[in-house]
Image (cartoon, rainbow, N blue to C red):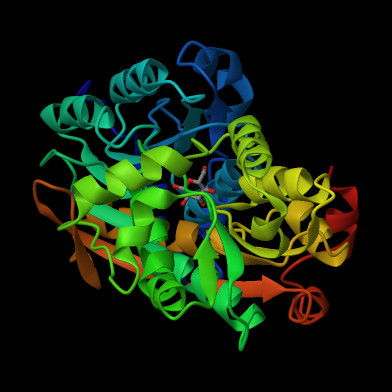
Length: 400
Ligand code: BGC
């Protein structure tokens, strides 16, 4: 790590930040010396941004943030939430995007180490591949906080800040069960996230923890995943049944890609006869894939209606919910998670004790973690969340 002297100005901004914290509401004087976060896709871009966006007196960036891609609205929400929370607390930070490439992720981390960051907050593109990047950060004395996605198979992670991903899956699965309460033989289409993302396993295991009983009871008939039928009536554990989950998810993965999701759904519909259509239930792992899959089901004349899940409360999906094209989403409030992360960063930088609430095993070590809860949003609850200011109708209307 390139050691940089912290200037008097920087030191005082930090002290004020430490006094103010991140969740303390009014950051007082710290906010005035706060640094808006710079943002760039590739390391070289940081110098372009420097004039306006790297305000630390000696140019030091305290907190480096690496997010997986700009191509999904979810991560742009996180970028904004981080920039607001860290700047409010007076930390200098820089956000970089990996654009779905582990090589870019690694070079982003290297650039941030060069910048002299003290804490790296990273949401990995590929859980296993990112081990090399965080090892470099650790070797340079940088504290590593996994954000939303856990990096696996390494001991070079210090903390993990996440939503309760198992609860996301449970909420999705339970929504489908409740929607078809009292019915039998309802075709169930299952889709999952990317196998490179540890969360995809947790979401799916969460959903299956409730769906397995509904398949066993005959409420649902799995329509597109023969590999899972043997597990009717049986939960699949993220750790103990990882290899089984890997095989199953491999057959129904969207790779978090809208086009893959649409093609997969279209292929499933072409392969199935009308008896596996009609009124159907669809487990879609997140909003982007939900919209793509919903479009494919809408286009099939033998599908009379569908209930489809989602995740992230993207504006485009809230619009789909209002238009009756998506049934639900799971809202993960990125502002809350950014503030939680910021509090953690604050504790790390001040040398104070870092409050964690649980641990996650990353197939190497138990990582001290903080876990946030999630909220189900559907056509019934959305109006209340608009009137209480959680979402803005204008933003929903503006969504593409
Ligand atoms: C996140 C989801 C997101 C997905 C695709 C997951 O790791 O938890 O919120 O939709 O990645 O980017």
